[in-house]
Amino acid sequence: MRRTGVPRRAIGAVLLATGVVAGCAAHGAREPVIGASAAAYSGAAAARMGGQPVRVAVADGSAGGEACAGGGWRLVEPSGRVLAAGSDCGGVRVSGEGRRVRIVVPGGGVTVAERATIRPDHPDSAVRWAGRRYRGEVELVAGGRGLTVVNRVGLEDYLRGVLPLEIGGRDPRDRAAVEAQAVAARSYAASRMAANASRAFDLVATTADQVYGGRDVERPETDAAVRSTYGLVLTFADAIASTPYHADGGAVTAAPDEVFWRQAPSPYLRPVDDRAPDGRCWCDVRGRAPWERRFTASDLAMLLDRSVAQGGERTAASGAIRDVRVAGRGPSGRVTRLEIETDGGRVLLRGNDIRYALRTRGEILPSTAFELTVEMRGGAVAAIGIRGTGAGHGVGMSQWGAIGRARAGQDARTILAAYYPGTRLAPLQ
Image: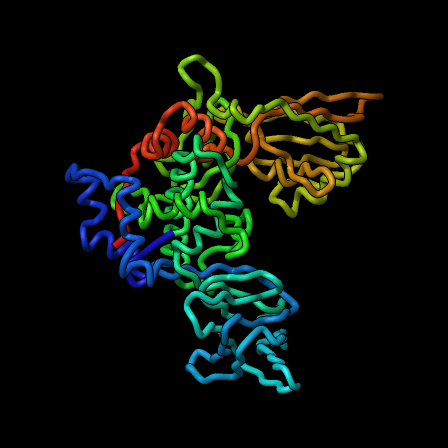
């Protein structure tokens, strides 16, 4: 999350030094207007529409793939030395050999480098990697597990590849929700850029950060939301706010400690009552219904070992499962601790780890907002039933709640203030 005019690795310091944040939050200056920011997308700014570059790992541990860029490209070392060049996508193959990048160019030429960058000759051209197109350039770094493929792309262009996969294409009624999503996604990315300055990349292109699909997924309606919120982020106490979000938070969103995230407490990330004046949940526009899961004793036995890798605590768990119980709930009512007692010991699952441990055909549990029933047979657990609501970790903005609020007439500023209380809008400069 990030940038224009600020060296990428100094975003937080520049905000403080220039008073961009303090000017809005501390001195009561008017916040920027969403929509007016679209003007920054025109004229000279259009040439650098992407803004400050963000580094997105689109693959980590890759065996290799085809790399090129339409309309001409160069493969260069960090020193600037050109390793290969071409006029079209003729099929450069790249793979990792230990700590080196092996590059095979059309015609059989082979070269090796510690790292290399695919750079298009024309700013509007897309780099192709593994069948997907990306704006900006792509850096290839070899490591023990294979190639790390990093797309260096302007922040605004990055968001164009995020919004369609995070909130999707929406109808005009949902415009304010999509604008709120743009600000939240930009703020999240900018906060990761500041935190990961010493790493090889700022974010990954999956749900571990934000799902990113590059140029191929861009849509006009989500591009419009990026333009109308150009460069705007949420701030709190003279810093860019880290703004997680989720699909459906139900009646009350969650606090970070309910999912056991390892992060300092953030006053703007706290449980939010997400009910409309008539008592219904704003997220009800989803047409939401309770979901159900059932796990037999044999299912649970296979899940016990997996739970350890996912962060569960256990003491020599083995033998028959004697009990499964909810051992704790958070302020939002979500399950924070789930205990499984066996003949040999105990497994304790906490927060979001519960969702990853209780998988069904590879799909994690939708949320930790659930009720538990236990079926006993002969003094042992035969099966458990889980009936829950919502989707996602529950912290920060509820995307379906934002859509419900937008359809009721709330603007993006109001939506963001509801889910991130105490934050302010500020431009990155």
